[in-house]
Image 1 (cartoon, rainbow, N blue to C red):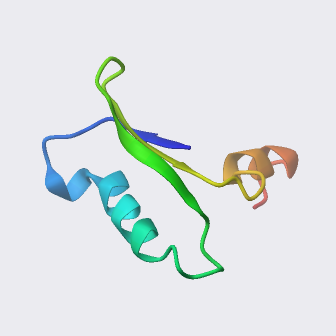
Image 2: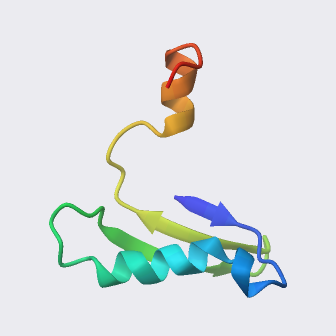
Length: 68
């Protein structure tokens, strides 16, 4: 899952661009599966939910002592 606080600048809405790209690439077997995306008005965040493939980079960095 990825989350992003919305901005007033379309150039900074990175998550929206990722959702568009991910949806267009769903027919490719090497691309992570899209599950859902949207906006949680109560929390004030945009979100993207996709298939989990393994540890995220932050977890790998922690386990390797920062050498990733």
